[in-house]
Length: 152
Image (cartoon, rainbow, N blue to C red; front, side, top):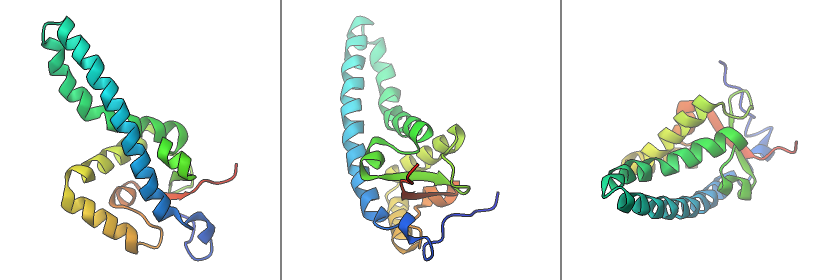
């Protein structure tokens, strides 16, 4: 697939203000994931008590995948998480289309991995700061770009 993202010079309206709104979207999504995690922990605690402790073992993987499932599902369904929607930005593939399920999952997995690897996170933020399209490392790996939400 050839990459044909909007040009940051001739189509600058696609990228205007996206970097700052992407950071704000991250913090909104962080809050959403924390709320989801509280729910997962409460349900896991109840299940753990009901199953005499066996359910507590399932709580660890449930906590680990909550953010991944949230991000994958939202990006696959809406091309944006709740934070991205609130900020008016969307993640698109090289054809300008919404992400399919496998690309959304791989992007969410790569994004999650950067959060657990501080040097990669720093490199990703640095790359986004100097890249003309503001792409992060997960974006580059998945051939995606964050743009202002197009008027449909």
